[in-house]
Length: 172
Picture 1 (cartoon, helix red, strand yellow):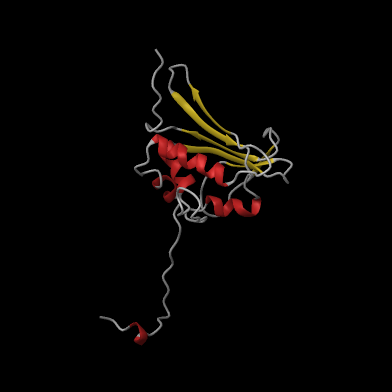
Picture 2 (cartoon, helix red, strand yellow):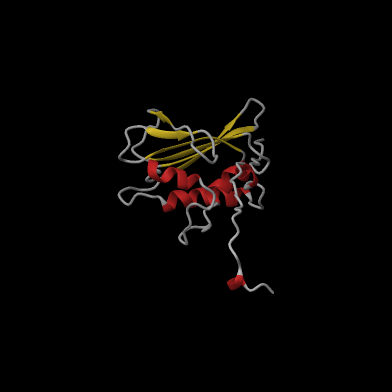
């Protein structure tokens, strides 16, 4: 067994770099559709405002062949401030024991399990416009602004290229 107290420091270093592949790999989990929905709603509950009733809206958009082509979830919670947006996107960046997934992977895993992020829009009560990002990746992300976010605060996540986990029974 190596005695760690007798180690000599080497002049060499090992660099560990983040890979953007992690964002799609997070979707390779055993989540059910109900697990994914629960995770996203749990995030809304954790970010709820105390001065109003929390509203969470889930929409499924269908194509002409009655296949789900877009998933959207919107809440009227606090939104994510600019100074916290990067850490909210970082895998394992936000850890809490007050939610379903205390490892900081939940939202990213849920989105990746459903499909591909089209956008995440978020607005705090202090913001005049919503901030929009169109990808999860490491490094500097382009942030866009939109006035089309018609509520005082909250977050909207839109997911495209949906996976088979989004299994909606056909109407007869």
